Image 1 (cartoon, rainbow, N blue to C red):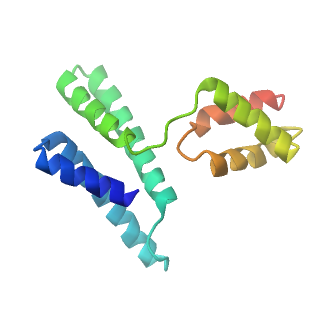
Image 2 (spheres, one colour):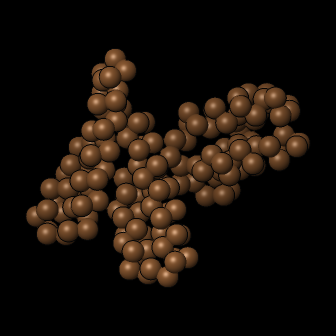
Length: 150
């Protein structure tokens, strides 16, 4: 994943695309920060799962910022945030559709043998392991809760 981001940055520098280059540099800086923190914890660098989490966090931050800019009538800043979101999303896996999410939840419930709300954590854990970056787990948790009879 890191190689893909670096290759995209080289291409954007050659194409003189300032917004894309800046966004990709922000991604690399966030990755390096996480690597430094991991070394401080005694781990040897970070993996693709960590990079995925970084990218998801960056998208969420920009969505919140874009919403604030929209509420405060700052369309130029909102547009900038939305452009950055699109650039970051290029490196995230394709999200599942609502039907695919529901099927995945039902399969996870069947696999874990979940029968009630006590088993909700098991189901969400299976989903997180199988579909990192492809499901909004806040929304999925609500669906799991509904299917388990809450």
